[in-house]
Length: 514
Image (cartoon, rainbow, N blue to C red; front, side):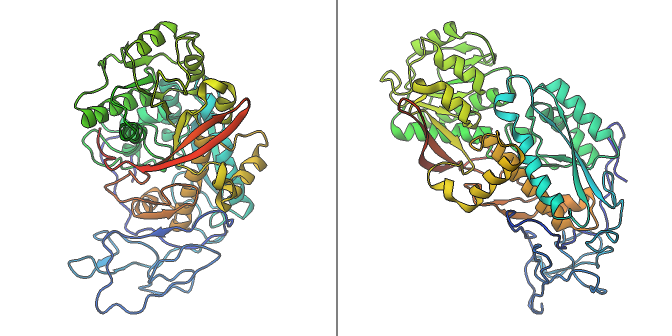
C-alpha cells in the first residue's frame, strides 16, 4: 500500500514491472527507448522479438497484446524485483510475467491506481497566471493543453483520456505548496505533469524530514528544472520522484561563466532575484564557477544575497533599481550575468545607470538565463538589449531551427491551442517537451498503470526529443541531470526587434556540483 503524507512507513513496490504496450499517439511525439541499465543479452539468449502496435515503443524480447502467453516478456524489468529473473553476474536478460490487461478501452484494468479509471488519467499541477513570474511562465499551460489535446483526440492512452486540473499560485511558495499538498492528499489524483510553478514544487520536493512527493510516491514528470532540488537531494543522491527535462539553472550559471571567461572576462558580476530560489541558487553557482576559473568568487558575494559591488541581489518587481545599479556598475564588472524574471530585467535595463549591452563599459556584454527568452522582453527592451546573449536548452523558432520539422510541429500545435501564445518562450516549449515525455512514459507503462510502474520506466528511460539541443534525455535511478546542453542566442535590435542570432553550443561538464 502506498502511504500518503502524514502516514509513517514506506511504500511496498509492486510485484510486476512496467509493461510495454502500444497506444495511438500523434506523430509529433518522439519514440521512446527504455533501456534497463544492466540488461545484457546472455550467451544462450534467442533472437530478439518485438511487435510494434500503433506506433508504440518496442522492447527487444517483448511480446504484446492478448496473445502473450506464460513467460512472455512485457517491457523493461528492474533486476531483483519480484517476478523477474536475472541471468549472469553482469545483468543478463530479464523475463517478466505477461500483462494482466490489454491496451484498449474496456480491457485496460479500470482503476489500477489512485487517479486512474477505465476512461481517464487524472493529473494536477500548479501554474503561474499572476504575479511577476507570469511574464514568462503563464503560457506553459497552453503547451500542456496542446499535447493533452493531441493525445485525447487520438483516443487517449490505452483508452484513458488525460485530465489536467490546474491552479494559479502566483509563483508563491506557500500558496503553491498548499495547493500541491492538497493534490497529493486527494486520492483521485495520479501525479503532477510539468510542474509549471517551481516555487511551491520546491517546497513539497524537500518536505520535512522527507519530501511530500517521496513519502506519497507522487510523481512529478517533465518539470522545467529551475531549482536544483528537482534534480538532487542535499546529499547528492537523485531526487527519486521528479524527472526534469530542462537544463538546471545552476548549469546555465556555470555555462555562462565559462563562456565569458573563454572570451576574456575576469571581473564578472551577477544580478539576480533574491526573493526567488532560482535566483539565489544561480548567483551562488555563478560565483563558485568564477572562483574555480579565476581563484576568487564574485566581488561582494554575501550570505544575505544583498546588492554589494558585483554581487547584486534585488527584490523582484520593484519600481526602480537606481541605487543598486549605481553601486553595481561602479564596481566595474566586465561581464554581467542576469538571473531575473522579465519585468525586473526591463526595469533594471531601462535604468539610466545601466549601460547598454553594446557599451564599452561592459566589454564582454550581458548573459541572461532562459526566463528572458520571450518575444515580449526582446520587443520591450529594444536598443538597451541589442547584442544581449540569452541561453536556452531548447530549439527556438529562429533562424535554421524555424524550419526544423519538430519546431514547426510545436509552433503549429501551440498556436492551435492559443493563437496569441508566444512560440519563442522557452519555458512554454519546455512544458511541451515535458508533456511529451510524460505521455511517452505512460504509453510505455501501458494498461496496467501504477505510479511504481511509471517510476520503473522513467528511471531507465532514454528519450529522444528533437526540440532539445541535448537530443536524447537519458535517466537512471541515480541521475536526473539528463539535459546539460545549452546554446547562446544573441538579441538583434536595429530600430525594430530582429529576433535572435544563433551562437555557441556548450555543455555543463559538472552538473552535480552545488
